[in-house]
Image (cartoon, rainbow, N blue to C red; front, side, top):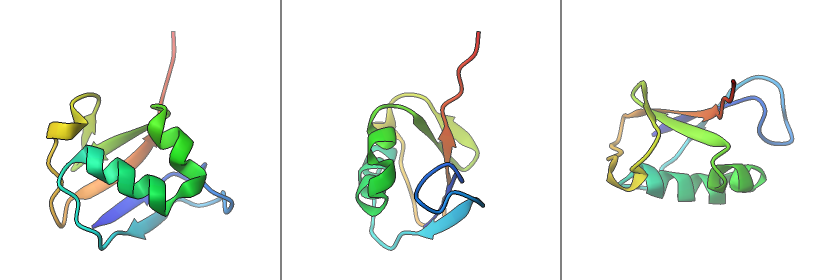
Length: 84
């Protein structure tokens, strides 16, 4: 599975990057845990809600434990957006 990671993460802040995960995950919640291990520089943001997952173009705002992830899915990490 390929995950698009925003340029604001990690020591090499610059262009967006793509990470290939070969570890099986069942849900969006599982994916978040795998990404936290793979991207320790983003672990805090992954756990505190500062990064949102989008799976196949659908933003996951709640219920990550019930959102299935399958091989071949397109996953993006999106910085949280706030406004008012």
